[in-house]
Length: 148
Image (cartoon, rainbow, N blue to C red; front, side, top):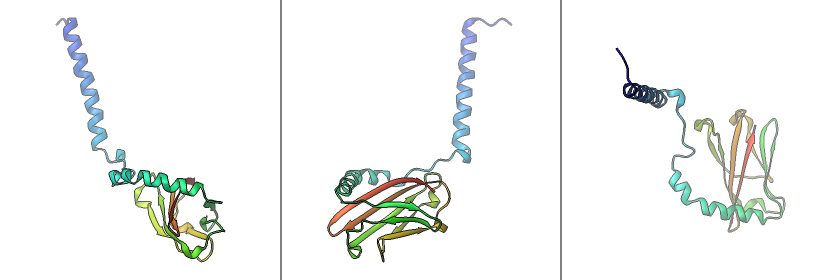
């Protein structure tokens, strides 16, 4: 049997399409290739984006901003010393890019200017920390990526 160039092109196309379909199907059905969304409600987060930018801009105008320090006990978040801690309220959200089951949120409750995120809640690796807080009527936002 002799194969002419037209038949060879058709065979090449069929082989190429089969090769691509194999990878598409294997990537779609294999659980080790599952990827989580960054957030479930991404549309709602997008609507909140401009407000977040405004809150970050407000934080730039503070005399001193929030600082983070990692210790053996966990992550210590230090709020500015010149602010009254009784008027600070908000939330701290810790996002783990590699596993959404490890994400958690905690309320800000201060007895001094430091807030401790305990070591038992944190695994080694990368964390995105987002501190959304209010002082009096002004809202502020602090974001940082750390490796714990």
